[in-house]
Amino acid sequence: MTHHSPITDAAAQFAQSLLCSLQLLAQLEAVMLDEARVIATHNPDALQRVVTNKSALVMALEAETVKQKQWVESAQLPFSNAGVAQFFTQFENAQSLNEQWGQLREIGMRCDQLNRANARLIEHDRKRIATLLRILKGDDAASTTYTPQGRTASAGSRSRTLIHA
Image (cartoon, rainbow, N blue to C red; front, side):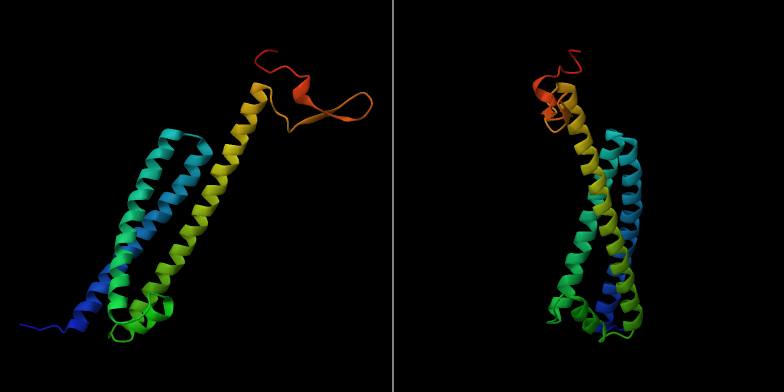
């Protein structure tokens, strides 16, 4: 019977948690790419499915991160890149753990960029729809036209709505 030290067990548990986080982030990245495609199709049902999937992955990832934070902080280290790197120095597989941590950070940054890009797409669509609704209602005060004298005039004061035209 082999007896593992607490440090060996902690290293194995942390390594398993890192692998789980890497898998979750890879899935999240794929879902966020799907989200961008679905946003472009303007399919609200498909978007809802993607968002639900994305939320579940984020929750699972947050749970793994909480565990990792607890392990690092239990070693009296801050849960930061420097603290994690220092935490890894006590393990035989420190190099491997550092590489996985680097991969985790890289994928995390890509997911953050995708999330920001998707948010911009959604905001652009929201503004476009709001503008179309204002035009349909006839209160697009933002658009101006010119009078025969060359002065600007708000279209809202003298135009009829598209619905009433």
